[in-house]
Image (cartoon, rainbow, N blue to C red; front, top):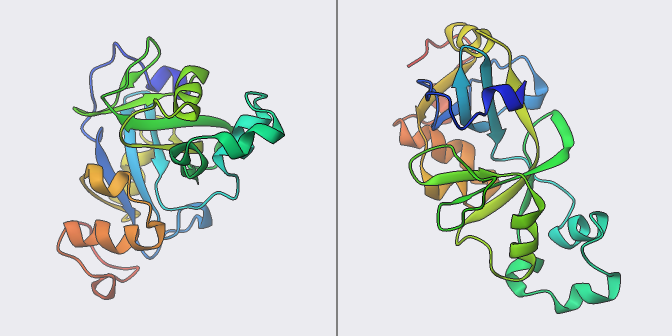
Length: 201
């Protein structure tokens, strides 16, 4: 489904480039208190990435798994690579890695998902990051969140999500614990104002 939804030739949907902010009554524990960046939205469904779930794996772990690094070489990685953030992007295809990044890095496989943010899911960007030659701002996400046709729209109608335009600084912030409250603040909302029965904005 993700490949069909995330297509370079498609027209952008009205939720593309938006944040989804989970309401307190979110029934799915995978998405409780999550902030999701929607990368693709069309009549075929939607795809996005959870932005505030930690991942135990480190970037050197990923390089070792992909056999792009020998164990004794990890210490020689650039600091930017050793400290490169890995996050849990969602419950679908959790073994698959995606890199959300600023548009100063582009390869043949990079897909623009907003005016200044791209998505690349191939080894070229992983290798570039390992050399300290990756994009200025980026994060790797393992897995993604996906919805079938009409599913996300229905969840929004049922008060599952608030929506607002995404902010690049929040997408790439390393402070995962504060993202939920900061995303709500973009809408002028504090968590105390929300209840499971609240109407949607």
